[in-house]
Length: 168
Image (cartoon, rainbow, N blue to C red; front, side, top):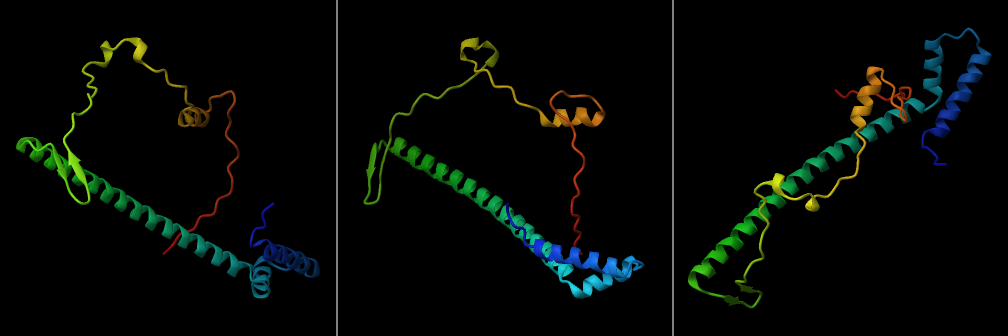
């Protein structure tokens, strides 16, 4: 079992809360909260944990944006390189130059390989079609269950508590 970083302080908070309620059975919620806030660091630890999560999420968002930018840049470089190779090929073919030897590379014009062109998929015989394995449409199952339909082998579990954090 993995130890969670807040567990020790949560345990301490629970013990102190139980002792306070035992010692002062008529204590109101606000006084209990204020007292526990003054003698424990649980709220501060939770706040720091949430801040740390927000920071991680911000870093993730920044990295995702940077990765998208880098992917776009990579695609641009790939297109640019292909275009430059095409320019070189055209120049070599038009000039009749079959081979260009340089100190750092050798470029040569070669015959290409035949490329497939499909004009009418409907006319291609069944022998060339590959059946695809069935795939569960989770969204359709979820939609049916939410509508109230019964789906053997699936159900909606009870909602789990979530932490909502709003930033200013």
